[in-house]
Image (cartoon, helix red, strand yellow):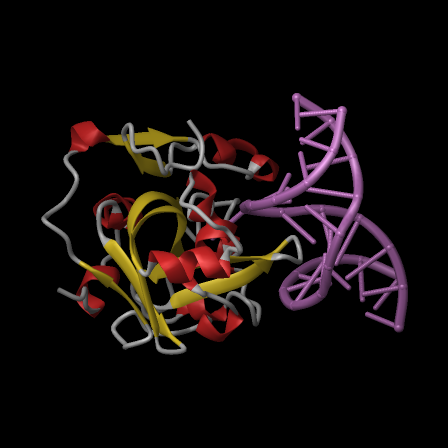
Amino acid sequence: MKLDKSFYQRTDVLQISRELLGKTLVTRTGGLLTAGTIVEVEAYCGACDRACHAYNNRRTARTEIMYQPGGHSYVYLCYGIHYLFNITSNIAGHADAILVRALEPVSGVETMLERRKMHKIEKRLSSGPGALSQAMGIDMTFYGSPLWGDRIWIEDGTGNICDEDIVAATRIGVDYAGEDAKLPWRFYIKDNPWVSRR
DNA sequence: CTAACGATTCGCT
DNA sequence: GCGAATCGTTAGT
């Protein structure tokens, strides 16, 4: 079942991040359907988190979508090459977001392989934030897309991953954030082979 | 207007 | 393990 606004518009970004593990991200674009299980995410808290683009409530054209009510897609270009896909959360005015870092492919694998210019399934198909965006066909045209629409959405699975199977660790690539770089705000499913780093 | 840099990936060693 | 690729965003002139 498709998750609706109420899932995303809660205030606890860490709780939402944990609950996103095991859910299925789906895109339908160009008549092609692709889906994958979310196995790794990172939480970013706008007001209080130096690693977040919206730190200290900094407001720019790029971060604007994070200030809207949660449940939208926040996509941005990183290193001039990679599209990174985030899910916004919280109520209007609270710029929280969750970066999806890795998926386990579920359907539309042929399409994913084609988009990634690969011939067989291997980990790099959808492990890593830039890689999964490419596999799912996510680009800047997805910026601001509601997650209750019919182009990109998230489906509930068979309940939440239990706490014993969730690992909390420090986030990747946020060394510039000082003390906030040490926060254990990266969550992934224990022993899942699609997680981007051990 | 200009310059520095990044929530990364891939290929080569 | 290391370094290049590559360009929009940002903040400062």
